[in-house]
Length: 347
Image (cartoon, rainbow, N blue to C red; front, side, top):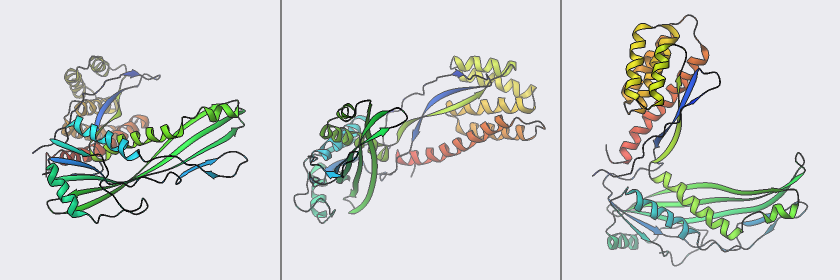
C-alpha cells in the first residue's frame, strides 16, 4: 500500500538579473527523509520513552568578567512538546493511514543518563493495544544551554545570546520481528539581543524556560524532516538575451506557459548554433524538470553541454551555470528514487 503525503505546487518567482543575461525561478522540491520506514508499515505508534532531564543539569551562565556558573531550569516537559508536534504533523500529512500517540512516558524507572530497552515485551503489548506495526520512541531529549554576553567593539554595543544544543535519541521498533533501529539527531537554536546598555541586552533575551520549550517545538519540526520527505526550495536559472527565441520563450515563462516556452526554444535549437544553441537546450532542460519530465531534462542538458563544448569561443560563465545545474539535477534524481521508496511506490 502506498503511503500518502500532500504535495504542494511550485512557486514561480522570475526576476531579471542586473546583467540581463539570466533570470531565475524558485521551485519547491521534495527532499528525502533520513530514515526509511518498512513499506508494509501502515499504523504508527509514537511513544514517550523518556526520563526527564534533571533541572540542575546542562544549564549554564557565562557573563563577562564572571566565572561560569550553573543554573536550575525545569525541563521535564520538553519531550511532551517535541512529541506533540511530531504527532500533529503525522496526523496532518497522513504519511501513515493511522497514527497513535502515547504521551505519558512508559519508562517508569531508570536514570536520564542511561538509555535501555529492557522492556521489549511491554513494547510488543503496547503495539498490540494500538494495533501498530511500527513504533517510534523518543528515548531521550537532552539540552545543554548557556547564556553569554560580549562587548562588540565595532559597534560599541553589548551582545547577549542564549544558545541551546539539543540531542534527541530515537528508536524505531517493529513488533512483527522485534527489530529495533536507533537514531541520534542534533539541533542548535539560539536567541540573541544587541543593545548599547549591557543590562538591556541581557534583559532582551527570552525567558529561559519558555525559550527551551520553544526549542523543543522546533526540534519536533526539524525531526519530521528526518522521518518524512519534506519540502524545500531551490533556485533554477534561465538564460535570457536579445536572441528572439530566448526572449520569446522567456515571455512564456513569465506567464508560466512552460509547454509554449519549450516549443519556442525547440524551434530556436534548429536554427541556431554555438552558445545560443547551448543556452536554448539548457532552458529546455530546466523547463522539463519544472514540468516533471526529468528524463527529458537529463537528455536536453547533455545536448546543451555538447553544444557548449563544441563552441570555439565558449562563455565560461554560461558553461559554469550549466555544470552547476547538472550537479543539482543529478542530486535530485538520486533523491527522487529514495523518495519513491519512502513513499512506498517502489520496493
